[in-house]
Length: 113
Image (tube, rainbow, N blue to C red):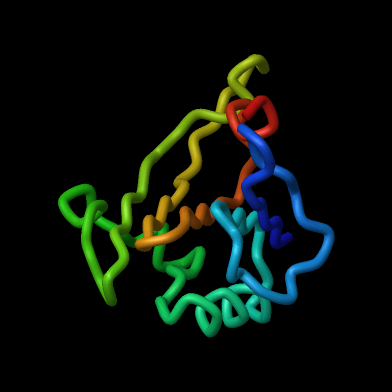
């Protein structure tokens, strides 16, 4: 799923269509399809790490810069309120104009934000 958020007042507003990222402040890729990844890559001129690549990133390589963007991959807890909490990786990509998140889970911080 591709969610795009624009600035609205002092907060963010989710856009209904994903035709352009020109005014987006935050692009949230949740379980993205190959087509969604490719679309964001074309719009921003950066490479989005795939799920397989996220799982292979070594601890020493979780922060890097590439093509003018800064990448940080973090391991976070999700389903923390269950008897069996899990961990997942989330990549945060900061370009000169926007934040991109790539994730395959729904930690509570995201819907709360």
